[in-house]
Image 1 (cartoon, rainbow, N blue to C red):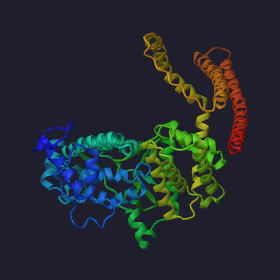
Image 2: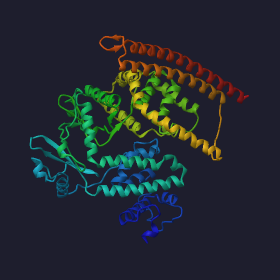
Image 3: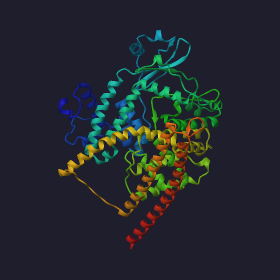
Image 4: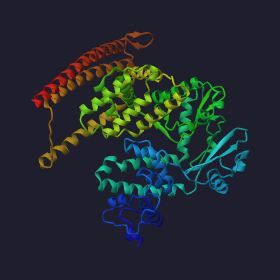
Length: 582
């Protein structure tokens, strides 16, 4: 009977079969029978439960939330991630999923002790001076116990819930299967890319399940931020941390949640000062290090005596590359300068595919409206969080899927600004962002960085050149065999011709500057006389000066050419529109 029910593509073990049936029954119970039958059109699911009484009063987003809560930790975690992605699901669903809660009971201390023995070979009574048998908190993946080391240091010990890995792996297998079927049978689901979402979710969850990953995150965060004034980073106890157990310094303070709710506690701190500390810390994490706390909600930030700020819970961290940071900085910089087309180009580079639905003119018009709405406001009224939220709305409107790590960065900045403004409504966030923008722009102009990246990529480029003849032979062979298909579509050939001309000029200039930079760098490294100072080659430094001057000339000429090109393109389009109206 069970094998008849199970579709092809899923494991036939008893755990998977039982869980699949449970998921299908729950979908039916909450009114998603239509979804199951659309995913599996050749099955009628006569065994599936009908919707029970009482669910009719709920909206479909509410039914989805209730269904996720009943299906347990994997679906709750997925729902929590989807709640932050209104660009992937509609806003009513995203808003409703923010209300997801976990209903889990703590597991017995006997199991906690067994896991600690499995990890370290000794029970907690031998490893710690004190170990509380009652958990401080319990969640779907693990629970936290208070303890004290033998040297007197107070710590918290996170212990992974037994059996949770097997449960989540089974759910992920079923999720992947359902996501594939959704893409196969529905174009609207295909645009959402559920398979990619599940894959990203599985990777994120696998790191959350392995406490070694969180320990590595904490160590790197400590290295980057421990020297920051008015900030404290909890210390990791490495010898008592592993895959299933994580031990770190316990923080005694007030969470931002409690401070915002209790005026008496709020009076203990200089909240305006702490608002700047928190925002500057997040900006530094993103722009200086490219490694940031991706879940800075008020419960994960504590305040200590002396106006010290502490981030806790390092299970969800984000990374952004230098190129991604530059694109984000350019989006803000171009917005402040009113450069609509350039701002749109950078925003597109921040998406997964660079594609969007609709016309470029409509997209640029909406970007222009966003800029006009914000650019003339007083500094204390300009909200980076509001601008980012508007950008996310544009991404949703034009079906532009933002890169997951950049979405995490957007949400972290939005969250930290909201916290900062709850401490100080007059917070001038743009003034705080501006130095980081300037720093990133100067870093982008530093020739040493370009030379280092060029040399780093030089070996890869040589490898690609070595494989080029073979690739060309394959193309020629396909052409001779009549197997090479070439599809050509053209729109606005004049624009394309001008673009190719401009691109060719830019490429030739860039190659000239790159050759001068590399040549000068090699001369400096080779220490070719005459020298300036002890052993700095005068010829090499002169080459750098020429490269810098030539770069400046090229940038000015390029800027003038770009403005002229854009004016001509707008003029041509207006002429074409007038002809069409006639």
